[in-house]
Length: 348
Image 1 (cartoon, rainbow, N blue to C red):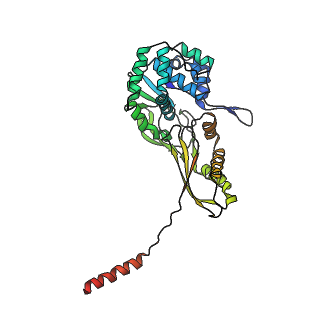
Image 2 (cartoon, rainbow, N blue to C red):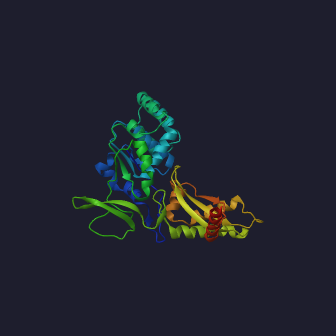
Image 3 (tube, one colour):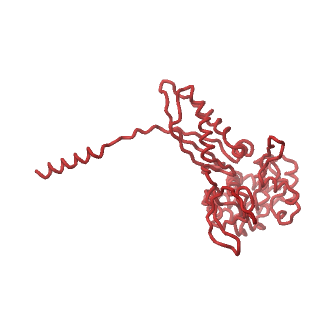
């Protein structure tokens, strides 16, 4: 059961098609014809649909219908698998209803998806009762091994920025082994050639003559939710563009920091701003909303696609922090005072 998603395509100024590598793989003739790729719970129609709700609902539904046959679960990236589990948490009752009745949710409107799913979906009240009993429990710890009991491991890219999702994966999978079958970096698969790709690796050992390594991070990347990679310079320029919205109010950003909040699904960027403001001309909340939009529009195309088209990234948030006044103390003064006190104490 591998959750697979295609993303929106764009064209270069010269007219060439540009799209993520997994979109190219899933749309390729080889993917459809190669037998190992055909051994998935999801039909190709459920993979190639562009609507995020229909993709997720139909793929999870097919995975549940074949729950006893599943021996491996995963997604290309850890973030995609976590999204699927959170979707299951929110929609398990609808999925149970479809399995019990042998019908498909009306929100799945793509005719090709409905037709493909109906070839797998059959009324099964016993399976629906089993899923309902598992999902209605208070704790979702180990939900993967409970719903798909023959699962041996979780497959996907879990290194670099994806490592932030490992604790959540361990919770859902009851700490099943996490495996990546890809010998690759951000730009390419590894072969006999060397590339300067900008990934930071730690060599961990050898498997025969092949290096074993751990991904540490993408060079200079400070923010990442999914396949987006935002570096320090890019964020700095985006913040500068967003700050321009404050100029009419004689306000400016004096300090800022950022982090990727993955506690919610989808995750999102958070910026903390410390401002220098004119108290006689307060900045309206709508201006900070404009700042958020300007910053998002200034970030790279991968971020913008994930944010607007694919909905894999949530809205950027700006949080205004209060300026802290630091108290400065003179250590020499305190030392002299302390010595004077000691002398007085000595006299007494």
